[in-house]
Amino acid sequence: MKILHLFVLSFFILSPNSIWAQVENTPACFFDKLNTQRYHEMGQLYMKFDSVTPTMALCHTVFSAISKNQNRLAIEALEKNLLPNWNQYPSDMLFLFQKLIQLYIEEGKYTEAHTYSNWFKEQYYPTIKKQGISEEYSQQIFQFINNMDKFLDEAVLIPPMRVVRKKGNQSVNFTIDPLIMSQIEVNGSKKDVFWDTGVPVPMYLTHQVADTLRIAYGKDSLDTSMGRHPIVNIDSIVIGNYSFYNVPTLIIDMANPIPYLSEHKMSAKKLRKAQRVYDKFNRPMIGLPIIKRLGRLEVDWKHKLLSFPHDTLPKSDWEEQIQLTDYKYPRLTTPIMINNMNVMGIIDSGFDSYMLMRKDFYQRYSNQFPVVKNKQDRRLTLTVSGAEDTLNIHLHHPTLVYGGRVIQPKEKINFIGDGYTEKSWDMLMGLHFFKSLGQNIIFDFKDMKLKVWKKSINFLRQ
Image (cartoon, rainbow, N blue to C red):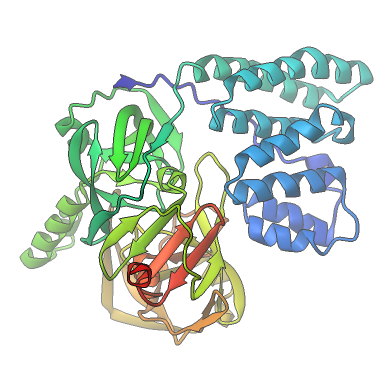
């Protein structure tokens, strides 16, 4: 086990401003969808265009591939277009080239990253300087080159996560307490872990769990969408017939909610319950980057089994598309209709709930979503950051359509608190929602679909 000494490169996440600012109406919406990583909606808009710019065409190809878990196709598209045709992207080359380098690092292609960065520095930059570019753009490129050299020197020292699959399909038993929990091996020790599609890093451990595993963690940290935390490299984890090596893992300081609850004069019974929940959540958490590397995750709710099938599946009763947001800290999203409005939902198995609506989304479209308020009823939510106490406000008789099917909500749809800045989703779809769809579901990261069976697939295979 080694501590990672990370240099976190602050790439400019540049939008091709000069071109984008000139485009209006529908094309402007296209780039807005791209910037907010709503790639499903971006693709729908793209199909409506009669003509497109080279930047729009390339962005559509690249980010559609990323959303479909096909980073290598995104790399191929950028390689094919950027080097021979760089003059077609006069003000957007830096933005597109950054994506290429970031994808190389994500896929462990360090040699290619060095080769293309040298081309960018030694051939592209001198050429466009001779042609005449603005001082501002020149400075942006210069700073990018300096950062890129430092980043690539550090990146080669960090071994990429490696996955080994044994033949067969070894199922894993799970329980729900209160989330999907199974037993895996972490550095040779058996540990109960939660499965959370809403965690955008491969894995996280609490300080207490890291201490029991004798994992040394220092001041090296990574600024993620979950905040800044120490990061270490776990030698190995074993899940069924899959082995993962060199697993980047955040060390989370899970806040104890008891002081907060004591201040609010909660009863002794509620304090004991909160302590039990806190103790349960003090476990390792498997995140989306590992889950998607399994290829397919089958959840058999009836038999409480997790499987990773590679064989041919029986035809599902119904299905819906799923998409990944950007590769660095990915989210898993899916389209859903609520009250006749098409929205994007985030698939988050780490929420012990049915469905939640973002407050900022509700505030923009409140006239379409009648609510019921109960000032006497309060909800208490425990998170890794502590406790959240909110009024119980829920939607009044909402209508849902998912996968082309009308779904009667099984539970109240409440609101999720402030602090969520990502614009890639509007609704949070929790564990209870997916448990209610059928006896079997599969998150298929090959076809990028959520597949649903009313009856257990294990039963159908007998």
